[in-house]
Length: 111
Image (cartoon, rainbow, N blue to C red):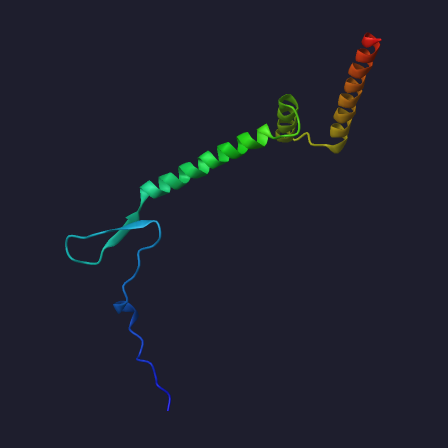
C-alpha cells in the first residue's frame, strides 16, 4: 500500500566530516585520517578578537562624554572600589561650584 523507503545505511558506512577548525591529516598506513587543529585559523581568530577589543576601547575613550582626566579619575575610582553614590554627588557638586566660580571671575574681569 505505501512505498517504504530503503533501510537506512549503518552509521559506520557514512563518512564523517572533520570537526570545524581542523584539517584532515592523511595517514601513511591507509587507516582513516586523523584531524589536528588548524592553528593558523585559530591564531588569526585570536588576533582579530584582540584587535577588536583594543579598537573598541579606543573608540569608547574617544567618544566618552567626559574629559580624559575626569574619565581616568572615574575609572581609577571604580577599580579602587570607591563607587559610593554620596562621594560621586560630592564630586559633582565640587565640579559645579568650581565651574560657577570660573564663570563669575570671567564676568567680573570683563566688566
